[in-house]
Amino acid sequence: MSLQFFNTLTRRKEPFEPIHPGQARMYTCGPTVYNHAHIGNFRTYVFEDLLRRHLKVKGHRVTHVMNITDVEDKIIREACARGIELDQGDALNPPERIPLDEVTEPFLAAFHDDRRALRIEDAESYPRATRYIPQMVALIRKLMEKGLCYESEGSIYFSIQRFPRYGCLSGHRLDSMKAGARVDQDEYEKDDARDFVLWKGRREGEAFWKTELGEGRPGWHIECSAMAMEILGESFDIHCGGEDNIFPHHENEIAQSECATGKRFVNYWLHSRHLMVEGKKMAKSEGNFFTLRDLIDKGHDAITIRFALARQHYRDSLNFTFEGLKAAGEERRRWTDLLLRLEEITAPGAVSESLRDAVANSDREIEAALDEDLNTPQAIAHLHELTTEANRRIDSGEMTAAESAAVVGVFRKWDSVFAVLPEGRGSLDAEIEALIEERLAARKSRNFARADQIRNDLAARGIILEDTAQGTRWKRG
Ligand SMILES: [Zn+2]
Image 1 (cartoon, protein in one colour):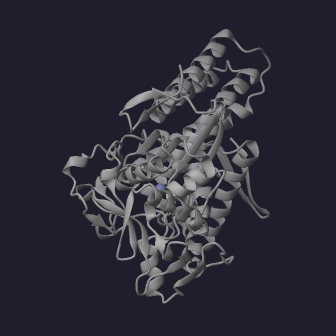
Image 2 (cartoon, rainbow, N blue to C red):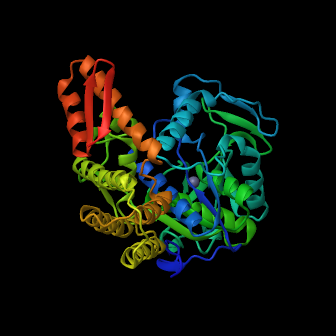
Image 3 (tube, helix red, strand yellow):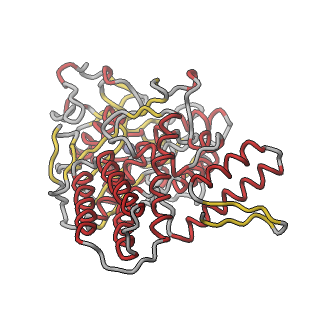
């Protein structure tokens, strides 16, 4: 079966046919770097990572661009509150560092640390909006030349009535919108569809650039159109984001880009649904708002968090619970423990036909599940079935080393998508060593409950600890 995705634009599943066969060009809306990304953001970024990894398994060469929004309303407000220099310089002759970097760079570095902890692969490019001001200015000028925008009080607005397809992505109807009504904010509600701002003229107390359009700064929506087309070309394959990006952000990206080029901007729009925590919308006021760092500080493991985010299909809303996180940890442990067992097997002998069939079936079913709009829960269910079957064969003493290698092969292949297993025998050992270190630290700080818990957890995995005068040793029991 071929790879297919649910396309928000057409509202149906479609086979994936890239513009250039064998190459997948995708753009994903990245973080706004004015605070730490929360787990709702990471749900989307993990989905996009699973997508890029599966595209690679399917043999595509992936060019993935994730932008960094380092200028928009909230960042400007923060910079203003901190009294940071307002003049960001000449857009065509930019200095190496700009004053706004003082607000954004610590959060940009933190974002990369967080995504690496979650094993989110490096994208091919992470363009920062502040480094693409000339491209945004050029795009706005193009739209002005075509008579699609107008100026008011020094700012430039896109006239949505001039793009008859406006609403094609979100389903918003153009005839219900107020002609000539304008909106200046970067984010606004669906009921509020109106002419949106491309360029904000300089305002008292706000950061600005000196450009051909005069002094001012770009609106948020033009940033993504300019960076996407600069790096990926005027038409490319996939654009992703969270469902809250559909309107107005992605709707506006389509309008600006397609009006400027007269070409289809993106062929496949993929959106992940939102994340709730313990059944409620995540909100600081509810006390259920978590960044990745909050969860790690509570003692949760980043890879288990990745698994908890990947276990739900991306188009279903995800109810993140601590119970679910625990279950994700246990499921992951089942796979890790199986790998430990498999690596111990040394029995000679060939691969039996029944095992060869079982492995080939699993492999086929997992691939078919992921091909079907990235159905991760289905693929994981097949890996669990294989786990049960492999454990049964080991228990009955019928597994040979060659068979063990065949099972490990399927797990390793699909872990190139899920990325939740230790990275090889050495790192399994490293995981155990790390737990022994943690137990030692717990004992030193007289946290005996934690120390005992680690010993018991390891025992449950068949790892026996021996405390000696020279330190703690371990062996497989
Ligand atoms: Zn964007």
